[in-house]
Image (tube, rainbow, N blue to C red; front, side, top):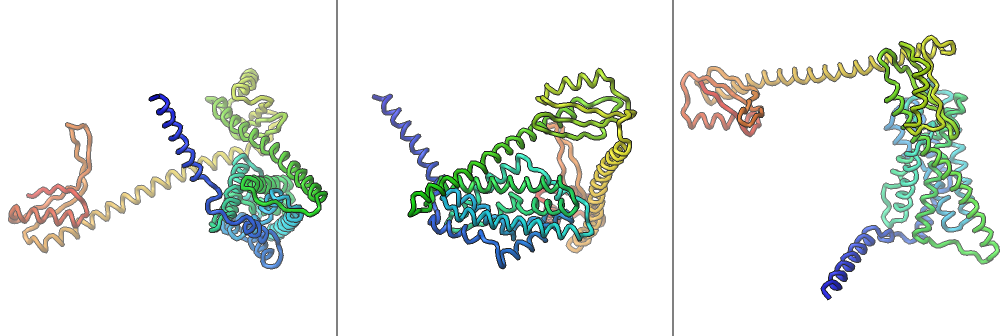
Length: 458
């Protein structure tokens, strides 16, 4: 009987916990009417008039930001960008079986992409700054993190869009998923005839768009948005077939691409660890390492300078690749003195290495100089403060002749530790009374803004 009561009590407590979490994570709490949410997303799909001009201006702003390597400018451009509308519209249309909305969303997304790439191409064709900055290079190929950001960012965007009180989540999603910079980078690729940049950046935009649409589709289905109703059953079946085919054709390649991105990310991490752990030699230095991943075979290109390593050592290194899970990977080592070695590449690598090392040394010296300047400024400030405090103290104590105040390190031998205290020294022509000394010490604490102070009187 007692055991039955205990089991019942445990089940009741588990049920209470489950109900608590269900209430906490209930997406229907504060939800806007589904038709209102559909109308809200539908209004932001079309690109014409002011919406199109805002996109063009935002692309120009983002292109300038990439050109001058300014993160703040790029973020500002993403805030005013209206690109999220048609992307979320595609996911919504697939979720509610609205083929007309799907065609409209895809048409407007195509217009937006075309205008964006054209605008950025025009800008980068005329800008005098033609170097690829780090902000631009970061958008030339997607990583697993881009996939995750697009997926979870899209989930946040549709959940926020379905609330009665609209939050700033959708602009935040536009910033996090970075939809505009890849399009601007694609324009840079066209302007400079660099197809690697163009396809890499467009690939990144495609991955981001697909996973934002996918997350929108999942939430729309999960929250059971009302599907479009058809009078003609044959037409309804045809539309559902089109939507299903479109969803499969979009999701399956995207999942495959995402899987390859995950594989490449894991491979690059293992390859980097291999280079750092195994290519350490006493009289040989790694000048550069290039990681080239392919699904079937991958290559680690290493350039060495200094004492040549033997063929036996290279064979051992090749065998060690499997220890780092680098299967189907070839290690290509170029050493100084090899006939196939490009001397120009070696020179540039040496100069790059020297520059990076000098840059680190300069930064370290700058930090030390800044620290010394702060200490010198503090020392000078303390010297000026001593004279000011002495003059103020003499107003109340005419017998004060000499005064000094400074921080001192006290060694506490019994507790085997040290502490820093503020110590003041005062010499009087006539020693004040104990009451006056107490007042003087309290005044010094208030004047120097400390809780404890040691006063030495001569």
